[in-house]
Amino acid sequence: MLIKSNFEVAQPVEKVWRFFDDIPAVAACLPGTELTDDLGDNKYRGKVAIRMGPVRLNFAGNADIKERDDAAKRLVVDASGSDEKGRGQAAMAATASLTGVGGGTRVDVSLDLQLSGAAAQYGRGMITDVTEILMRDFAARMQARMTGGAAAAPAAAAGGFGIALRAMRLALARVFRRFFLPYQPTTS
Image 1 (cartoon, one colour):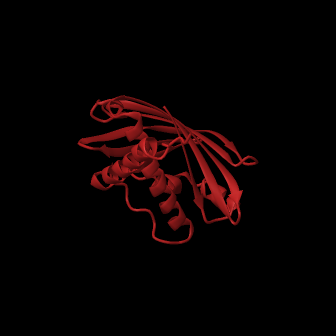
Image 2: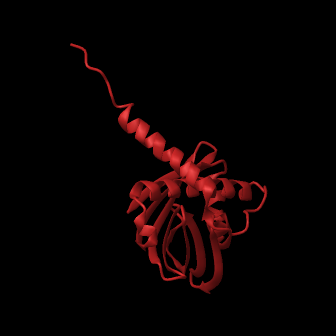
Image 3: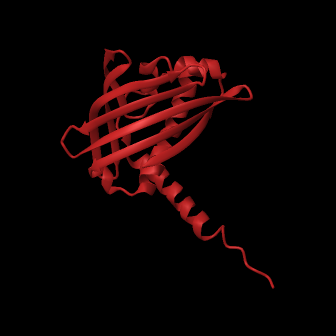
C-alpha cells in the first residue's frame, strides 16, 4: 500500500538535511520506535510498537539506508520486521525528499507499506489515518528537537486511545468530504 504524506519544518533545508544524518535522533522522533543496535554500513536494528484499537504489535527488525542523495536531498530507507509474538510482519520502503520553502523545509514522504497478520486486518483508510497522525507527531518532535526544545519522549507504543480518536476524526472528515462537499445542485 502506497501512502504519501508531507509536512513542513521551520528550519532551513540544509539544517534539516544534517538532522537526517543522525539516524538515532531521527528514530527518537518516530513515535513507538527504538533503535537497539547500529550494525554499521547504514544498517540498524530496532523495535517499533504500535497499538491499533485492541491490537498491540511489537515489531523487531532491521532498517537499511539504501540511498542518500545529498544533491537532491533525498533519503531512501528499507525496513522490515516481524511481530515478536508471531502475529504478523511488516516491510516498508520509505523515501523522504526535502525542498526549501521560504525559510523552512517541506518534507515529502512516500511509504510503500506491506503488512501481513494482525496489522493487515485494518483497512487502508485506518492505516493511512494512523500513519498521517504518526507523521504529524514525528514532525512536531523533530521541530522541537531541532529548535533545542524538549527531547523526544522515550519510546512508548505509538497508538492508544488518543491516536484512535484522532484517526476517527480524520475518517469522519474524509466521509464528510466524500458525501457532502462534492454535491453541487444543478440548475436548468
